Length: 209
View 1: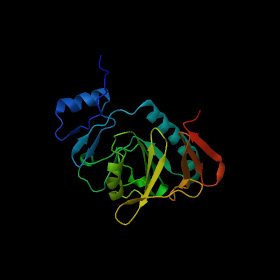
View 2: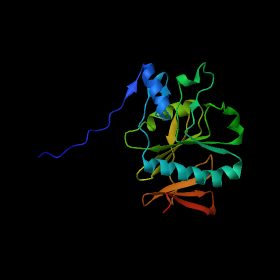
View 3: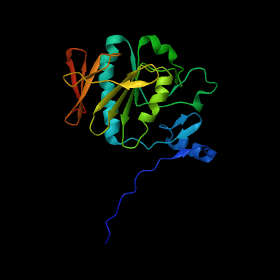
View 4: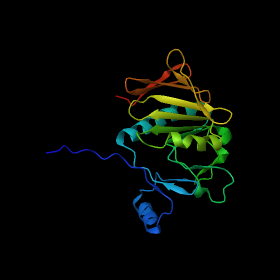
């Protein structure tokens, strides 16, 4: 008997979404992670349990240490779009998390943020479109993009260059340090080690044991 092989995941981009599909996805809640890239609907699969847990614990830590220290906000599963659109739903993305300093809180339109947050965070799953979103985030004014591997928890920080993001380098101790937030991070035995500036009390591992 031949062993069963798994079919590799396929990418689906629907240019013209039939109304009955949109209605069904809204009714069932399946559209919560949908994005529209310049009029093209991108339907990603629902995140795994490990993905959800990493996002949740990272959000809790950022709210407790970073947001409280500067008066900023940490939000998840919220829409971000460029400014000046007649209809923002024609072009938006939904990062896993984003960080907003007080001076950009005015970007909120309740339904979405018009303009780039200071930092966006993507937990990268195999085959997803985290890297493909970077040009969009750059164009709307995001200062830093953090991409964290779902499985290894290895982080990457992309900082603004002249025409595109460039990848930041770790320091001698292996820490990637965000210049925008003061958050330091590195992978450590399948977890994400976190620290805010030089505050030992903020040291944490995601996920926690």
